[in-house]
Amino acid sequence: MLAYIGRQAIYNTVYNVAGYELLYRRNEQIGAAGLDMDGDEMTKSVLLDAVNVFGIKNLTNGLPAYINFTRNLIMDDFAYLFDPSDIVVEVPSEIFVNDALVSKLSSLQRAGYQLSLNSYNEKNGRIKFDRIINSFDVIRLNIAGKNRLQVKDLLQRLRFSRTQLLAERVETESEFEMVQALKFTLFQGYYFERPDTVSKQVSLTATPYGKLLAELMKPHPNFEMCCRIVESDGMLSHLFLRRALKARYNRENVAAEIRRGMTLMGLDGLRQWTAAQFLKQVNTTASDELARKAFLRGRFVERLVQKSETSIAKEQGFFLGLISLLDQVTGATLESILTELTLPEEAAAALLGKQENEYSAFLQYAMVYEMASGTAQFPNIKLRLGDRRVSNLYMECMADTDRAFAEVLEE
Image (cartoon, rainbow, N blue to C red; front, side):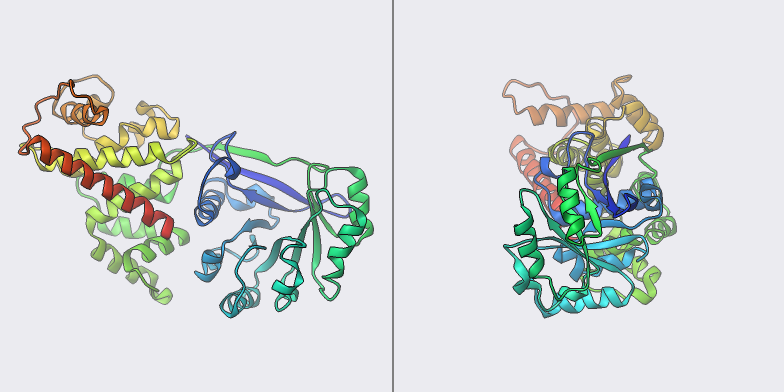
């Protein structure tokens, strides 16, 4: 599977790279502008891939990575999961400013994090940020379409600020000369370079979510191994504990809190949470629809197994349905997927179309049901339900899917 991340260099006055802005990319063509995505989700995805897939220092050659943080993530202390020498916390100009935000930004700066105000402009002006304007290490100004007088007027509002000024959207040599003369010290734009998309071939189990999912697919998952996988990654630990404990957790004893959270969540809850997170992470398509469909199919097959006379374990039904669409979600082949995410031999043979068996019957039933055809022929899976009850079951699975993906967005 290929992982993607966008990157655009930030230059100083002598044309040396001073840092990189990291940008969300779902594939080679689709970035944030091509998706209706939550800002929290995009930042988490960028950081997860930057740290666990690419290596953040490799992406930036050891220079600071400028990353946009939403208000939710700032208030949730998300930046503390990362080394202050690796990132610059970019604060969006449309953010709601109150005492709570000011306190959080002050704490971040005291902890050694650099702060950047993103796209300061005439609309938000100095009034909104006058209380904290000197808290920022960098202030970005978008100069696109502005002449010298307009930029000088905007700078007048910052006359008491001691921060570094970063001119973004610098696209011509004359614009570069203009902002240099106006005492800008950092620059970004097409005049220097366009954003590039970095890709890397990674295995599905290279990231913590993939490792956790692979462990949970085993007939008897190792509780301690699951705990260690979660504990090994700061972001995964944070998101898991937010979901499992629903409240602030004890940061002084994260290992114990993870064990408590797993006990409360249970194996079924952990499987579903991990699967939803994993699908969001590996999805390379233009929307979440296929990822949601994979989760829904997995949940439906699981429930069908529970309501049938079969020896198949319900969790294997869940993974059977989920993996049946994973090739379309990730762009990888089913053969390569099954070398990493192992299923019982008969289940793998059913997925690959090599064998008709009990697994293939359940999968075929789910796929025929999704077609909603009045003339479709269903395989006999010895269901202990009538047609009307199957419809209710499918609706319950749809609600489970909505809830699982909503929880991913809330964390």
